[in-house]
Structure formats: structure tokens, C-alpha cells
Length: 110
Image 1 (cartoon, rainbow, N blue to C red):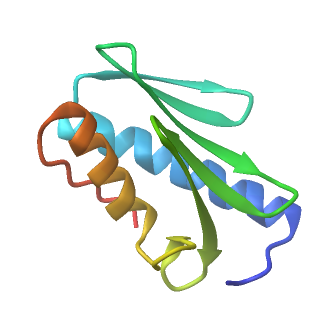
Image 2: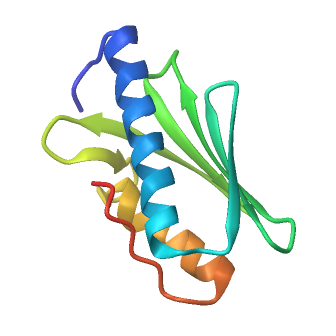
């Protein structure tokens, strides 16, 4: 993974959170979104939440979903990559949302 400055890290997180918001809107998913203190929170209709938040000290992006918190590092070629198996944030978030919503979700954010 590439080492980012704090400014570059925050810029990359802001960029991907913006892309997530647009991709979720484009998919027409039945959920609400809000930005809170640097985190993007996705609220499902049943009250379940998924949080995409920044971790500046480790320069990671964390995806918190029911039962798991997943860590992503930034790669200049691939974007945000899951630290356990090199899946992209878009792939993992699409799967997480699909599982929660009971439908296949593809997000074009990578």
C-alpha cells in the first residue's frame, strides 16, 4: 500500500465517500445517507447501519457493518483495498449491502 500524507489521505476518503453517495443514488437503493464527523453512514430501512469511516492514524478506511469491521488501505492503482484479501471497497461494500438488502448490489466506485 502507498503511504499517504494526511492531506492526501483525507482527500482520497472524501473522494470515495462522494463516489459511494452517487453510486448508491444511481442504484436506487432504499436507504438514507448522512455525513457525520468524517464518516459516511448508510441507514437501512430496518434500522441497520453501515459506516464508512476514516482512521487517520493508520491511514485506513474502515467499513463497519453488523458483525464486522473491515479495514481498507489505499493503493494508487486499485483504490481502497481490503487488507485481508485484496478485494476493492466497491466489491466488498456491494456484497455487504446486497446481503443486508437481500438483493445483488453493484457499486461503481473503484
